[in-house]
Image 1: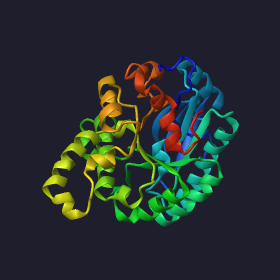
Image 2 (image 1 turned 180 degrees about the vertical axis):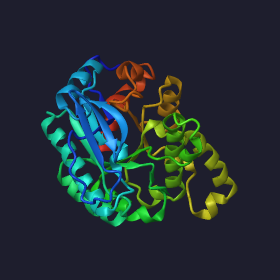
Image 3 (image 1 turned 135 degrees about the vertical axis):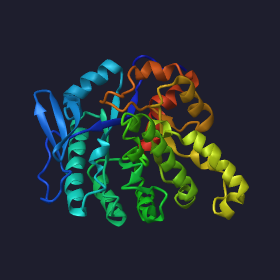
Length: 335
């Protein structure tokens, strides 16, 4: 049945920047973030360089709730601005920043009257410590972790992260993969605007196929992993990977199922901007595994989310609006 104008709608892809940051524990850290406030607007600086202009929706619950009401969004999943993930920091610096950001998100969730859920951050440059941080994050009321599409240049399928995935599976922690510092960005200096528009989806797709090739879902079948931007370039990469799988007899027996089998078990957000492509994701590539996401509150945000999703396929409205998001987050299904 079509969703009513007032039916629940969860936006899983939204970001937070704290209003205040702690002092860096290391005087040598040249990339520590700081927010310079200008009334309801602010400039996020990374070290001594301006990184992004923001408004109060990044840190203020009331401002977020007002814009959510206008867009017909009943709940948001809050995650750190990806640049805050800080895999390039020393461990002590990463923990200081991560605990602060996670605390801010947890407080917003607690004060949000049921309208917010939270994804935190962990220092994946040290996978063993990142795994130990998951229980603390969960105890703070967060239901998952946002992770970069690569960890300071290392693909997510690298075996060094297996202990982290094992602990995330054991605890039932959701993992949301967001593009970050994509491979090949250094080749785009003539066209830096191609980094968010082209390199981001390429890196997200590469992250997904690296996990498939590594057999991560064979090892950890209950692990819940989602990809932002509709998985980026994942669909054509999976089709090509399938040909390699076929020609190599399942990569010499290392991957028992075809790549499409694993790709359909991942989750994906709806942030693809094109109704036809979203319909393909929903109906063919990953049925029942796509939820709503906008990249709120940035300029690249998908606006008019409710109408965009409703136009895709009426039969999938309930899943797109709320059911798949709740499954991904590990929440009880709506009765």
